[in-house]
Every structure is written in structure tokens, then in C-alpha cells.
Length: 165
Image (cartoon, rainbow, N blue to C red; front, side, top):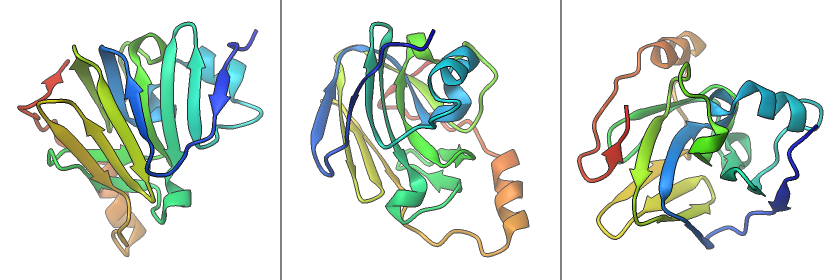
């Protein structure tokens, strides 16, 4: 049976406040537990917006709707976020797989965080630090370049945020 999701459309530039917890930032589809995706989104797909259920919350945006493309986006933390599904965002820990995903990072936000998504520019902010991911760029011209980048990302460390490995 599908999760009983409460859905809200994204308002560009609006500040969304998320509660304290552990979150994955990156390619949402690669991080979601398979049973959640299959039961809830396999037939309908995901839309830009905020999804809430008893197990947690996720906020996502379709990269193709933000002047971007599927590929690699370097965050202000110098980490290369690999987006293969076209959906980038943040998802709480009860909803993502315990392992086996790549292209994103897991963060611990003990005091919660603010999320702002506006025209392909993603901001994840706490009182101590901020992470920006800009999906508004042309990217590599050669598709093999994208494949090489998707397969060879580094695990950069963002010192201001607690990364859970």
C-alpha cells in the first residue's frame, strides 16, 4: 500500500524549515528505499514539491525544470552531486536506503535547517553553515564526459556540516 503522502507544490524562493535530523542531499530517486518508490511513485512519477508522511519529509525539484540537466553539479562544498534521475533535493533518514547510493551525501542537522529552491539554485542553510548547489549551467558538451564524471565523484568533506558516512 502506498504511503499516505501529503503533497505541497514548491513556491520558488520560499524558505522551508526542516526539523532536526539526518538527511540525504542529492539524487532523490537513487536514495529512496526501493519499496517507497515502487509503491508510491512508480506509476505516477515524482513532481516538484514537498512530500510529507509519518516517516519523514522530502523536498525535491526536477532538474530539467530548473534550466539544468541530468549530470554532475558541484556544490559550494566542492562535492560533485551526481544526478542521474533528474531529481535533486533532500530526504529524511527513514525514507532513504541504508547504503548503496552514490552522488549525494548524508548530513546530520541537530538544530534543523532551512531549504530554499529558486530557479535551479538550491540552498541548505543552518545557523553555522550554508550549502549551495547551482544547477544552472551548460555542463559538458560531450555525453561521454558526463558518464566519466558520474562514475568518478569524490567524497569531499564539508567541515561546517556534520557528514555521516
